Amino acid sequence: MVWQYHKKMITQELKTEISDIVKILKKEKKERLAQCIEKNWEKTALAYSKELNSWKPQRPIEKELLLAFDKELERLGTIGDQKLKILASLQERRVLQTAPHLGVTEGPRMLCINWLGSLAVSEKEFYVVGMFSGIPFSNHSRPGRINRKNDGVNLFPSTMQDALVYKSKIPDKLPEKLNTLPEKLLKFLPQAVVGASYTQWALQTCQHLERKILNKNNLIYLDINEIVAEYLVQVLKNRLHIFHKIFFHPEIRQQFIKVFPKEIMFYAPVMNGKYEDIENMILLEESLKSKSREILLDNPEILIQEIKEGRICPSLILTFIVLSFLNQFKCFGSFAQVEYLPIYQEKLAKLEFLKIFKIETVATSNLTTGIFPNDLNIFPADLIIYGEKLKQKEEILFGELLLPMKDKLIHGRQNKK
Image 1 (cartoon, one colour):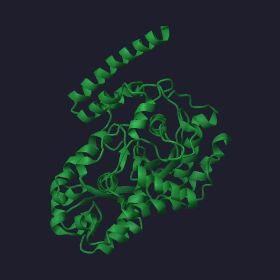
Image 2 (cartoon, rainbow, N blue to C red):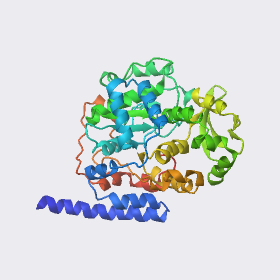
Image 3 (tube, rainbow, N blue to C red):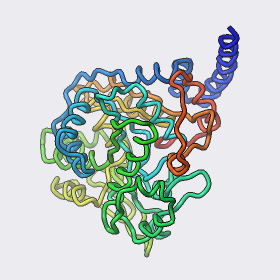
Image 4 (tube, rainbow, N blue to C red):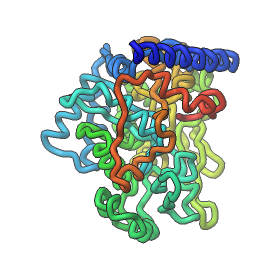
């Protein structure tokens, strides 16, 4: 009885705090985020995870997208029966975690997100994380660092701090810095070869660490930009495909631009003196154009080659058109995504040439965020180094995970993640 009374008091106090957050979010016109919190805060983490992972797609996955997932799995060393099982799971479940940026180690919030998202996924299925590499190394998630509570280690030189993570290579500095790390962490890191793919190495490392911490061998970490790029290389060859029409059919392109004026479609890595930088490529009437680059849209082979050779990286909107709206993936996201993804949905649903895809039926507000209330600064790297176990109860309420990040929910930047 005493325990029940104590729990009731905690829930009542939590309800008051959550109510305050919801009121402020509504006042700030963040209606969708407010609704997600209001609807789900009182559910246990396990119950909420089960609900998140419940999804029945109505359309078959495109063969080109399945082939793109296949290629990314092989790039990361997953082959044979395991690869086939993951592809079958992706095809049937069509659920993907898209909150994290691509980095070698994550922070407290992303660890909590993956714990929550994977909680209700059975051992026979796979929790697949599509990490977003279309960001610079200077991104607030610090994708080029070993992130720790006190002593993070930067793995990249200053000339690359604004470089694109997508297609990046392991620099000379990285293996040298790894030698300064504790042995307990080093044994979980694959060999880092200068000049080899950084994203491959980072994904494998992140997967190793979080499988150990969350005690789950069915966690799969992929580069979602690599997947979308490979998909585009395939479908842009098809004159009947919707993406071919968006880029190369003047009338369709004009309709798209009218709904998404000056939309960023690709990120382009460029050199600014000795420093690497990124430019945004905007879709215009006859070309894709950035500050110093232009791709004329009069020959599909030119755009295909630009993508194939890694000179441009698919943007946020392309990623979600492919995953959510053409292939009906239920994409989990953090507090920013539950605001911007439904906006994409509303705009895309207005386009007559996309009516066949029933875009309005896709689940777009799938909030996965939070911080463990008993340890606000719990970093995966530190857990490994100090040999500590993650001790979290699946009966914890979703609202209890939200409360420690109250300021972030209210004042957080509404860009990706």
